[in-house]
Length: 431
Image (tube, rainbow, N blue to C red; front, side, top):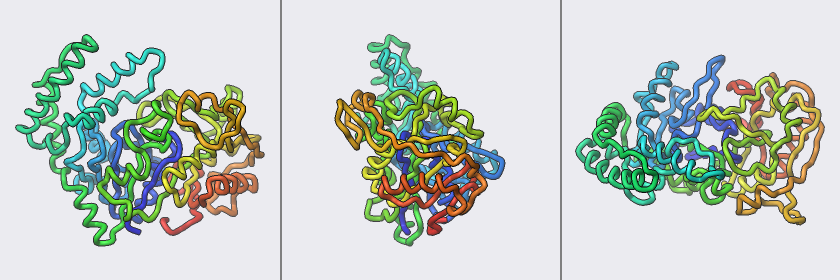
């Protein structure tokens, strides 16, 4: 099985970190290929937890080599701190983490501009993480951005940084009436980061393709949910990257013909961080019921912001399945529904008096969708201790059947808690 992809099918926060951590037991190479430290994945090992934002979640499996590929955006300060944090957790990083020279660099002025752009939007902000992702992607598109390969060659880096800062100072001073960037300060800080990161820099894409020639298993880790895709997501409330399987392949420098398995991760309900439409967002009364869960844990890993909660939207899930060519589903957080008397599942919408089964292109229209729900009885019994599909309550199995039938894709994995062992494996091929 040369290449498999794990992709989120909602607005992120589906539990991809746990899924990648489990699948990484059988993979030699784990790759992050898009986005930056605006994503966050948390892995629970026994009673300990560790969150990562750019390092692939597979780093916690000792045999796996992990890669930050050319499609990523790298904040060197954040990456250095993350390496130190993971090492303090007791995980070896130095010989197992590899950084592509093609990955673009995030600077403090990108983060500064990110906040300024959001403020200029007045009453209609996107709700970004403020990590500088959009401004960095803009520089990449304008072909003025700097990359990791520049960072580790100080003379080249200073020349290119000086050129970039000329553009950024014009923007800061003329548009925002802000003070200019201090070139010498940024240069000195970043050269120090370059010295720390240089040992990790290798030809990532060449190394991965040589691994494929040797028929070694490569696992590509999607960082964000499909509904945050810059083209097919709920634009403009999206991330600039392509979050779909095609974009994940492109960012890793791997052709799609190598992909033999796409695993879509779907939470048993829906959440969203930041602004943007959420058609199945629950009422305050229903929220009170949800928050009774013993382990709801719905705060953003990156920002700490509370996630908005909605019922499972199968119409959106099927849309995401189609966009990504999903072969199997991993259903997560089933245990959060354990205490509910009844559960709603959205199977379509009404828009302007007409039935629709796919989300419209405009965010304004998505916000006006009226969900059509199927209401099923809850199972009112704990699922966290269950390890076999036959051990689940009848109502929970009916919920699972509904998800499979509507999405037209089988469920191979069910998560009933945050820890590795709190999992039901239906398909053992990858486990």
